[in-house]
Length: 165
Ligand SMILES: [Ca+2]
Ligand SMILES: [Ca+2]
Ligand SMILES: [Ca+2]
Image (tube, rainbow, N blue to C red; front, side):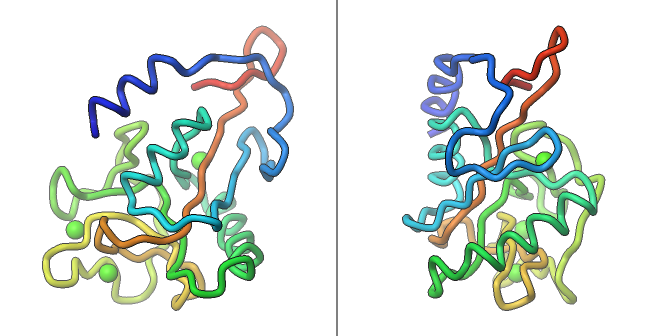
């Protein structure tokens, strides 16, 4: 799967774009897509986002976290059975050391639900916005299937906004 993700990333076109694609929600220089029509495990969710030239959402600030928390409440009505939403954090590389998968950066901000992360049964290495805890953060088994949030960055380049990193 790692190889496939790499291969896909090679074919990502950097298309000049100043607006979010249809169906995506904008905040600052990011566009977000709440995918509720399929339930994927964490790796499949990241793969799905990459096919759309994006990645699982990464929350760098309290403002971004609060925004996604409130948006999650809205979008969960589209899928009432959902457990929550996958986002791009993992501690699969080193237990207890949480990073964002795209950047590889450690968390600069976190908003865990009370008592979490608990690494329940020693087997929870992926990050979700947990429906049962007001969409605060929970570590969950990576093969659990649920909705997820993709994030697309609009970065400024030569005076115009383009999609890219
Ligand atoms: Ca972000
Ligand atoms: Ca863990
Ligand atoms: Ca947990």
